[in-house]
Length: 304
Image (spheres, rainbow, N blue to C red):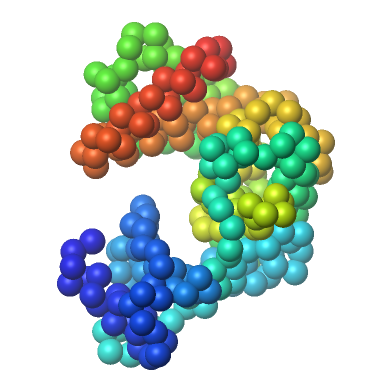
């Protein structure tokens, strides 16, 4: 973000909270779609990188889903700055730590399984949200009968990853990636997946835990889409087999026969995606970290 835009966002935050000191802005992160500021450990401002108005469908859905969810998440308010006309989201800050693998490694097995139970209850509530109601709230929807075609031919999908990543992978890693994508494409071409309302961006850093009580604090940053429910299971492979098994025991929405295969595809896909994103950004330090993580994941999952 350039300094002028950064200053503009600080001015907007100052107008919202006139008594605010710059030192009260504790965190800034440049995400994929948003620039995010955390203020006084109490509020989060999210500015859409693409600019323009913010579609209220996500805020509307979360207000409705909050009545059903057993797990906390921040509700969103949408505002427009009176001076600049810039739209932004404002929501309460959800305290806790992102449940990244190094954090998960500090949890005992009992504590991990308790988080798995909480996530199972959360995903059950989300994935059984009535589709007709979600559609009435204008939630985006995937066509499962055509997704194989997107993954196989779209320039942002498998062909893109092949072209971008293969020069940076070993032959065995290239073969692993081919099996990952081509196996998934073949499977969903012949057996399209069932659909439900999904978080659609559930990854380890969007699961928040309380580091003192050692429990789930909540879930943040819903992408929100009617899509494959197995895609919401992609972070859990990083917490171990016992976590995944416990999660399944506490998940009470339908599971089809290919559900777990697709879960593992989505996990592997996001590992590949992170390397591709680091390559495109040119951040060599991040690239080295992502490549190492992918190599370790492939070594731990040699057969799909």
